[in-house]
Amino acid sequence: MAITVNAQMINEAYGKKVDADVLAKIQEFGADGIFDDNELAQMEELGVDTVVLTKAANDAKTAKKTGKTAAAGRGDISAKVNELKQKYSAEAGGSDPYTMSNPQLKAFKQAIDDGLVANLSGEGFSKNEIVNIIAEVFPSIGISLNEDGSYNCPIGHDAEAKELFAQFTGQLAVETSPEVVALREELNAINSQIEQNNQQIEALKPSIEKLQKEIEDEINAAIEKSENIAEEQKEAASKLVNEELEAYTKAEGEISYEDFQSGLNSKLNNLTSDASGQIAAVVNGLMGAESKMLTLDGYMTKMSTLAQENKSLQGQLDTKSDALDQIVSEISKEGAEDPDCKKCDPIGFTAGDARFDFFIDKDADGKLSNEKEFLGAEQGWAEMAALDADGNGKVEKDEMENLMVVVTNADGTQTAKKASEVFGDADSVDLNSYKSLNKDMANGNTLLGTFGLTFQGEEVTDGYNTLDRVDWLEANYDFSDKDNGRGRFAQDVTIEAEKKDFDETFAQYIEKYEQLEEHLEFAWKTINIDRASIKETAQHIASTEGLAKANEIEANFEKIQKAKEEPAKETVAENAEGTELLAQTPVETAEEEKVIADDTLV
Image (tube, rainbow, N blue to C red):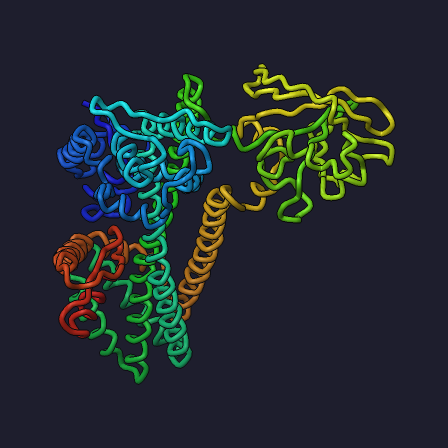
């Protein structure tokens, strides 16, 4: 029977127990979140105990059903109340507690703007717990929890208070929706796995760099020694090495690699030449470099596997994020207010084939940075009216000194210009022509009002003041914050930057790896030995002795894990070849710590 899995289950079940190739295959099968019957059969042929994977999947399902995931990171209610009271300290006051004259309501507004509801929901608090926390932190604002699980929320007695309470109820409906909570948990789990993978990638980097340096040093030392060996001695050594390699391979594991090395060294040293010791040193050095090249290849394969998994996880993240946005949109349409809708009310007009929207360049970058820079974003039409300095009922060119417009052309391209550059001396906005409408439009936005103006000497009647959804604005305006990775867009840009940095780093490692391969090929040629047979033997060594090495790593892992569980000691990160990132605590002495580290890093 097919089972549902995720990357974390795979890594926990098998990340430390199989070689990199098998783990990569398991991760490939599980990339779509399902192991079907055919994939399970193939894994069993690879020696994988699928019972363990099935158990991991069942454990995950049980945890989800019992709410263990939802409760992860959830704090104590009383502690959270005390924390928020300190952060948003305010005394009750004002003649009407349900207007913004109440200091506690002002403090509550700041908390809502800070994302209080989303933060509490993200920490695992239920809807009733969120209401209860808010009621205790801001007791005078009128929000309270009823015995039946419902809650009271005043409608508000002034415009700002009404908007605030509507914003709160909308956020609460969205953030505590079971569908939203479940999706956020999945997103958090994916993000957590991506972060774990990134930590492992970072931990692999110093190991790769250390190996590259060691291999390069061994190759250089071997080449230097080979320069003093006569050609006839190189031929004799080449023949002897090839004979011993063939015998070792045919023995099929009956001869240990240590015995093979010891026997080869002895025979090389018995060559009748003063240079025989140097030949033995050259061969040993290059064999050591070959062994380390295999280890280096394993490290790089592991790094590449982690990166590929992250790409797959990022795809899942994007898909689930889209699903979350869709659910939030649907819930909002059913009655919940979209909180962002109250923060952007563009004022603009159309003339000819172009659209002109007024904005204030708050960060002085000469561009429309985000929706909050639109004229009217905070107080609607009142912001336009406030520009009429002489009170003649018009906003004229000389009163537009601090205004800019974003011009949207017929082909969709946009440019930002100073209002004084597009308005003539005789042009003006007619404030008296403003007509309030509050009319829903087909695109999901709201037309709050219309107005007329004189623009470039022509009468224009297509002025508008709208209440637009943030997602619609992001789709229709080129916000510079998004391009530059600022504000709420910073995380997306950071992720791209991390990907780019990894690609560049990995390309450098690959380039170095290829250089070492060429250098090693050349080094063997200096003593007349064909590297092809050497590589074949090195791979044979890796396959016959890999299990023993894996057992050593596993033993060290258990030792480190045991040390990690000691609560009095601090943890540090250490990585083992073909394993997950290991959390290692300092042991009793520096010497013991060194032994563990040396044994763990192959």
